[in-house]
Length: 265
Ligand SMILES: C[S@@+](CC[C@H](N)C(=O)[O-])C[C@H]1O[C@@H](n2cnc3c(N)ncnc32)[C@H](O)[C@@H]1O
Image 1: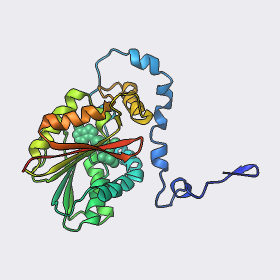
Image 2: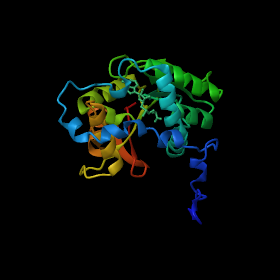
Image 3: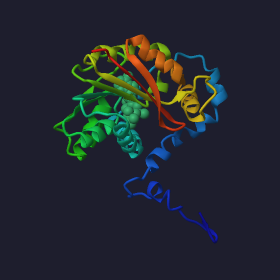
Image 4: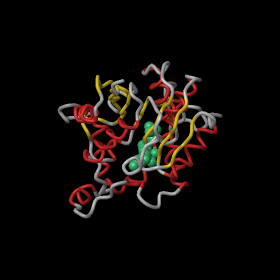
C-alpha cells in the first residue's frame, strides 16, 4: 500500500511478508530466484538435446545443507497445505501415513497434530530425510513420525500404510516415471487404503492454469525429463495402477489439485 512516498504492507499480507511472523513465506517467494538468469536463456534450454537429468536439481551431490535451505522454503508454506489437507480429508479411521517425497514432513506433522492416533513415515532422498527429522523433532513428534531415506523411483516403499500422500513433486517426472511410482504406491498400501496425489496439474484441455504450466516449463530449464501433467492424465495414472473411485479436487486454486482413489479392500 502506498503511504505518501513510501510503501507499507497491506494488513492482509503483513503476516506473510514480515520475517519472524509465524506465516512468513519469504523463503518460498525467493525459492526460484537463483534460476532467474536461466529463464533468460529459455530458448537455448528448449533446444538443448543433451541427455536429460532424471532427478533434476536433486541429482547426485545434493547436500544436507542444500536440502535444509530448500525445505525451509517448502516448510514456510507447507504447514498451511498440511492443515488444509487435514481439513479436506477424513483421517479419523486411518492408522498410518506414507508420504512419498514428503520433504519437511509438513503433511505428516499437520496430520499427526490433528489426530493423536496416527503415525507416519516421510520417505525422501537421504539428505532430505535427515532434514525432515529436524522439522519433525521441532514439533515434538519424533515418536510418531519417522523419516526413511530412499528414492521412490528405484527403492522399495515402506509397507503398512493405509494412506499414501505424494505432494508437489509431479512435474519433476515424466509420464513413464510417474505411472510405475503410483503402481508401487498401490502395492505398498494396505487393502482399503487411499492415495492422494497432490500436484501442479494442467486442466483437461492443457490450456492452463499458468502456474502448473510454468512448473513444467521450469523442468526444461533444469534439463530434466519432467513435464506438466494434466488432471486427466493423473486420474488415469491412479486408475491404471488399480485405484477405484478416483476423483479430482481443487486443493490450492490455480496451483494444486488433489487426485484421490482407494485400493479395494
Ligand atoms: C517440492 S518438494 C515437496 C515436499 C512436500 N511433499 C511438500 O509438499 O511440502 C518435492 C520433494 O520430493 C522429493 N523427491 C523428489 N524425487 C524423489 C525421489 N525419487 N524419491 C524420493 N523423494 C523424492 C524431493 O527430495 C523433495 O523433498
